Amino acid sequence: MLIKDLGEFELIERFRRQIKPRASVVIGSGDDCAVLKFDKTRYQLFTCDMIVEGVDFSLSDKPYLIGRKAIAISLSDIASCLGSPTHCLVSIGLPKDTPLKFVNCLFRGMRDICEEFKVDIVGGDLSASRKIVIDVSMLGLVRKEKLCLRSGARTGDLIFVTGELGGSIFGKHLKFTPRLREARFLKEHFKVNAMIDVSDGLAQDLGHILKSSRVGAVLYEELIPLSRKARDLSDALASGEDFELLFTMPVKEAKRLVKRNIINFKPIGEIMGRKYGFKLIYNSGKIEDISLRGFTHF
Amino acid sequence: MLIKDLGEFELIERFRRQIKPRASVVIGSGDDCAVLKFDKTRYQLFTCDMIVEGVDFSLSDKPYLIGRKAIAISLSDIASCLGSPTHCLVSIGLPKDTPLKFVNCLFRGMRDICEEFKVDIVGGDLSASRKIVIDVSMLGLVRKEKLCLRSGARTGDLIFVTGELGGSIFGKHLKFTPRLREARFLKEHFKVNAMIDVSDGLAQDLGHILKSSRVGAVLYEELIPLSRKARDLSDALASGEDFELLFTMPVKEAKRLVKRNIINFKPIGEIMGRKYGFKLIYNSGKIEDISLRGFTHF
Image (cartoon, rainbow over all chains, first blue to last red):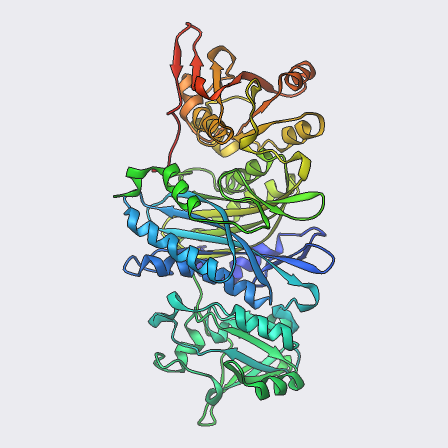
């Protein structure tokens, strides 16, 4: 049996089942970040993301943007737990004949976005590799009462998304802004029940929330904010790497949020009971079961 | 200009110069681990290590040992700061047609060594990749007064090494035991001035201590514990990945350590003034300047 026959998520699930974390681990594998005990008032967040040449970027992409993306993905993970990033390490595998100029730009892209979001690069590892590969591991902090996971969605919650979806494969995946400012705004003023960042497509990632929270959901085509670059709704549902925040909150909070209308938060659907499943209502009135869409690596 | 013209260490040095860490960073890039503020009595250690197929292991190696090695390298980094490991994340890039059995063994190798040294795997990332690549990022803790860096060597210190050197390329690099027990023994009973793990060869790694501490050193051929598998002294000096601890301590402490003679700690030389340089005295009486030997990735 090959791993592509099993699929990415089943493979991860098999690993998870074998691990029994100790008492210092609040949440282990299975959310956007691992959550560790830190001090009386805060948890520490710990996350990593690997990007690989030919899969997550190509050599024709600007090295500055490749470096930026490597860091931004982890920033997005920290944002989706409503945390603040603090430190990161960068492991880079590079072919020996990589031009120094390429590496300089790559590194400048990393450094600039770290400066922007006040994260310290505190070290890393450099290795020879046939294809370029970058793995960033990042630490963050979150106040205990603000920690937001995939598992907190409740029936009746409204579902929101930041920004626009479906522009990923047309360049956004290299230029997206990790939604740390939006996360800070939300945690300061609202009660968010569940959150994830859209890295595998709306359908897959909302699916993760539904599975963790043991609930169902309905989405409305007319409400989903499509990027002008998206060809159709499929690009939003199934193409990964929009890196927008996808979250749910009680109706009362949702009403307050819609009223504030300060940043680009759009309601796109509602959390339903588990038995309802996961459905999309098209403008035409057609109802589709969308539980099986999204990007997977294998 | 290509990165191989610049060399691994100069490239890392160029990155380091561009980074100005914030107040929460005690030691940033440049030691075996980054050292971060944690609580009143302890620092947090943060390190990452990437291994790549065809460079750090080959497909003909046992997947169990590949997984074990990926974790053991980071454990060795934590040991060399005299810390205790706590949590780790594992990023894995895998070809789609990797047999599930291979991945299961890989993962079992990781899990078993984590169990042995009481480290929690708290998550990770899985990505498609043409060649197998594994990056492990690890957290640890160390009591402030016990923290040991490369920069603490003093003129007159004796230089010690654990175990035997030079067996790396003949299999040891996949089977070495990270020296956490030896590190614990040392920190409980002795004052260690400087420490590093031997990952690029004795000459290179002692060179890192000398550079950070601004001192020189003399090594004696007759004292260097050669692995039975090593062909000659060159394998100990210049072949990487022995993952033994290399450390320096004041003469008084050194005498106590030699007297205890409990574990395999061998004195191999002495820290000298900076002007002395870095020399090896052969059994024949010949003196060689060895400052330029060791493994580099580019």
